[in-house]
Length: 126
Image (spheres, rainbow, N blue to C red):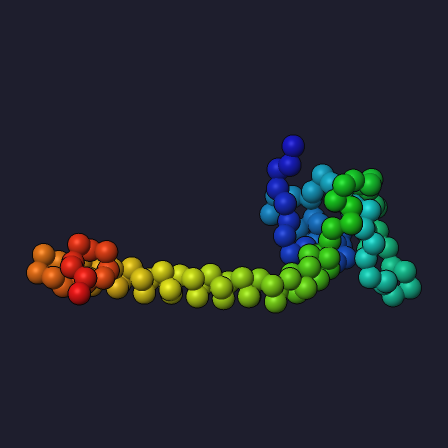
């Protein structure tokens, strides 16, 4: 059971930070199998959480290779394809709107009087 999540936590959660959270000191600080950027003098970024006895290492799992860097990279790689797809949707919607407006304008032209010829509205073809 998870009581709360802390978003925007610092890269190195200090003892002071962990003990000042609104819900009190967390019962656990988790880290998965992903590696982080190198730290100066190989600083243990979870040293304070370990000293408080709340650090938990998560083992390998099916999402172990997914991290923020991977997600951002995939978004940027697919941006061009996404923008093209959105552009095509806009072009299609504009064309559909134009056809719809043309049909609506054609309906108000007095179809029984021979107007709208050749539009499939029952007008005679000359």
